[in-house]
Amino acid sequence: MRSSSRGRLNVAATTDDTQEETDAPAAPPARRRGTGRIAAAVSVFGELLITAGLVLGLFVVYSLWWTNVIADRAADKQGDKVRDAWAHPAKDTGPGALDTKNGIGFLHVPAMKNGEVLVEKGTSTEVLNDGVAGYYTDPVKAALPTTGKKGNFTLAAHRDGHGAKFHNIDKLKVGDPIVFETKDKWYVYKVYDILDETSKYNVKVISQIPKESGKKKAGHYITLTTCTPVYTSRYRYVVWGELVRVDKVDSKRTLPKELR
Amino acid sequence: MYGWIWRHLPGNVWVRALISLLLVLAVIYVLFQYVFPWAEPLLPFNDVTVDNQ
Image (cartoon, rainbow over all chains, first blue to last red; front, side, top):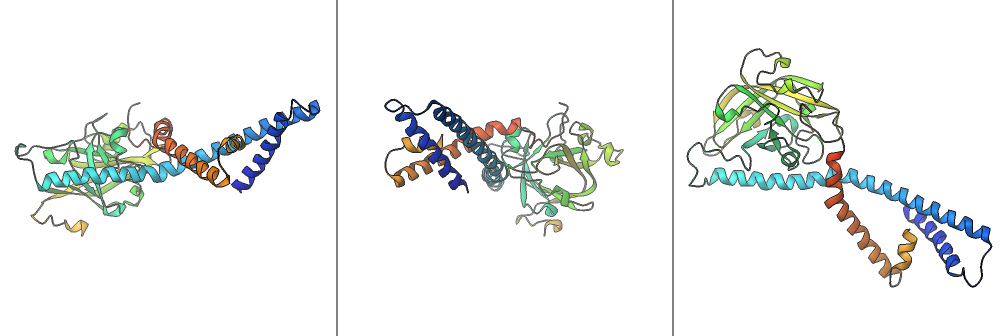
């Protein structure tokens, strides 16, 4: 369909052009020439519209497919680096030293069926666009489980495009496990509340004690946030979990039973 | 517009078709590499965090 319309436009434009070239020797009737100009303008306008449509179509391809390719590539690379660093720790880092540059661990959510998600510091576009989940540093700083202190481990990731790591967040149900893996610990959380739509200004959902989920006392919480409905960012989707137990990683990195 | 480009390309139909294809690919590359990454943050599709702004 596209080629046929292009062909037709070509013909129109060609006749137009020959008209212009033969203009000087044998002047065509003035009226004929005027309509030719208008026809040419209309055909250029039409071509521009078709082009705009194609560009918009390409943008959809870009956001829903290409950004995933790029992001997954980046996430795999950084994830490999973290795994490498865990397997062969550099000698100069003392015990307990936490290298946050390439990520602090991996999030496993079996219900989302997306494998492991690398967790990095910050929720800026640059961080999240690498196909990772970011922990909040602003407006409320996340409490990292590795510190052992009570607080809320708040995370954000993309719903669509850029790895779409939280695309299936709506598949999570109360009681589902969320496991955070670090170098030497498995932190097993259980989902206890879900908010399927809230304002993007609702920063209370990521407070250290998320009261909206019904909690009154400090505890070890995890909060996942992403945008909803899919393909837009009108609202935010929030999932809260609470720490159930902490397993030590053994030499074979045996998965906790929730992930088997 | 496209007719004008076609007529100004050198060579026969096949050469022109090949050059056209390369031009299309070049345009797609520029769009994916530069234009779309620039435009994306300006569009309200991919904000996933809660914040005060």
